[in-house]
Image (cartoon, rainbow, N blue to C red; front, side, top):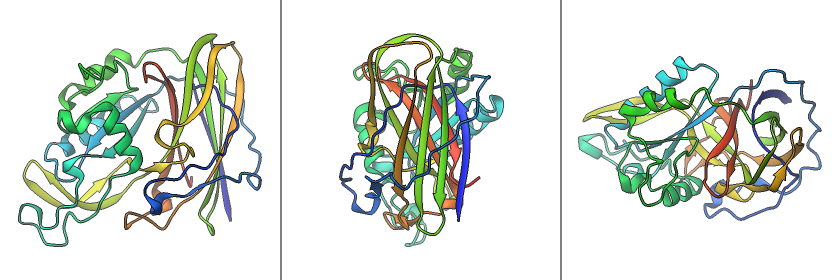
Length: 303
């Protein structure tokens, strides 16, 4: 049985690619080079274009302040419904398994939610070195020295208010066909430029998972049934964290491309069961030089 659905929003330039690249974590090595069996997607006509913001929440299960940041993200999403995409990336020492942490049972804090993709982002953006929790908002203001791209959570609402009205420059649509029996994902991403641009762009598609119930430190209060949301699981794009080359140079108004990917969801990631009923796909395009994301979209894997 297969599920097919669509969602659209402003985004960027897409080419066709299915190259296979080995993932350093074999359990997540699920990118498929063959999209021949994937169906062609039909995309609806879009007349409303909304610029969305990817909020990347760098977090960890022994980070006491991290639940406060997650709550802030949830509140921002409620304020700007339909304009926010959340991504929780577990990185650094706070994400290391810590059985029996702070007097908890020996079976507590044993899951490992880190990923090769998240480690790559952390190495570039420096979140865990700077101190968790940290947030990024469409990766604006990237500066590897000053680290102005990292925002500490009490200021997240204020920062979002200052960028939420930015205009869309691209329309993005995602169509997903998922086979429940084989756990194979076929995803098609379509972009349509709403303005003429000149830039070098890349595109990334990520898999996330919601509703993972496990231990979490919350300012010294150990919560055994904490619900982890927006958790990064892997990259759908075969080249991994930094995605696929999309465009270099002039991109005329009205440019449109469709790109296909295939991926099989493993039973677990680092022994953490992956329940596809709570999975989502996030797609975004970013500027190579500045790392800024010009548009992002998210869909449920199973509607």
